[in-house]
Length: 266
Picture 1 (cartoon, rainbow, N blue to C red):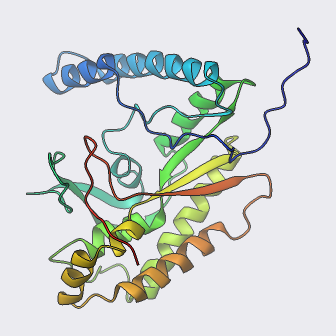
Picture 2 (picture 1 turned 120 degrees about the horizontal axis):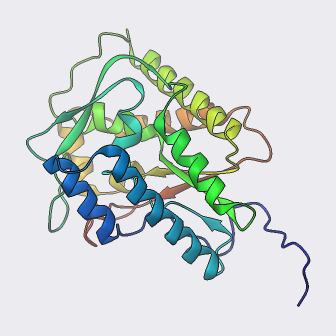
């Protein structure tokens, strides 16, 4: 058998993984104990560390060239990242902003409360560094974050009682702030060693749903205009991206207990 070092290459790869895996029982049990006050957050992180190491070993062993942490540290695939942005808070909600075709997740949403920015100490940076260190030279450390579209979608489109945000005099100023925060985020992940970043975005699947289009139109929202602005924001965030950083996008129609919240196509 040759001892030559394997050349992994640059993502994305012909066979790849979206990034999220079902949480193992050890992680779910530890989170329940944290909520009950019988386990500290430091102990929870140790449980997550062990679960992530085990997952990455499995990903490598089945031949994946890009590995993720399964998003095991997150309660939600998107809110955990977005609520850690400067100027954004997670708040309670009476019901989820979208309805899945079956069971519903625990309700929560976001609110923009100040000037939006990406903090230098965003906890996801350390989360990525753990994935990279664990993967070593066995595979590319892939990391997933919600697309910039999701912040506006949650706070401004899905919010039935949306009111203009005081910090921003108009729509353009808000979109510019989101784009600048993401440009800063992309640079921060790159500086931390990330070379494969995935933006997850459910807005496009939602914008193809005829029922939702009618509901949004009834509220005076022009989804065609909003979609155009989302493209501009994403493109602006990616301007100046290093050539050796692969950025991909995952688009889906939602997934909670194998159910979905939007359907159709245009």
